[in-house]
Image (tube, rainbow, N blue to C red; front, side, top):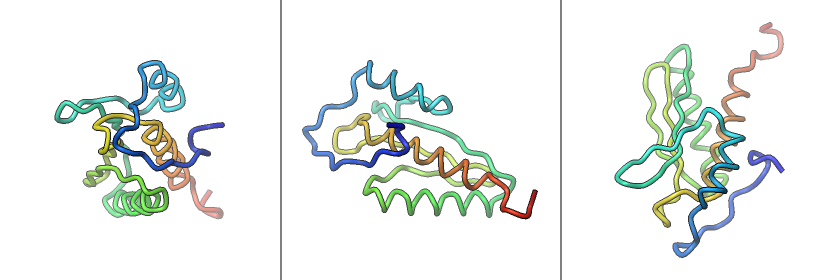
Length: 121
């Protein structure tokens, strides 16, 4: 099943982080995401671009709604024409399958907002 079609599962503090092998597999579905380290913690990062601030803010709001629905929350930086999203699991101070699921759902959301509305084409 594609990551974007999966749902997040509740994660306890003793849940194991994703293994290097799992991460490599997940990243095959997420070519636009990179792993960076913030305060020594591996996190998924992607920068999304937009033609203006309003569309960047609308996307930020949509990612926030998605995060609330799934019960898993990212760090988001909204700037003129761009939104940077970071996913990681705070409880385990690392990456969990949930982070990759949410990255895939964020990609799908971005694709949806980038499509012209019917009648615009």
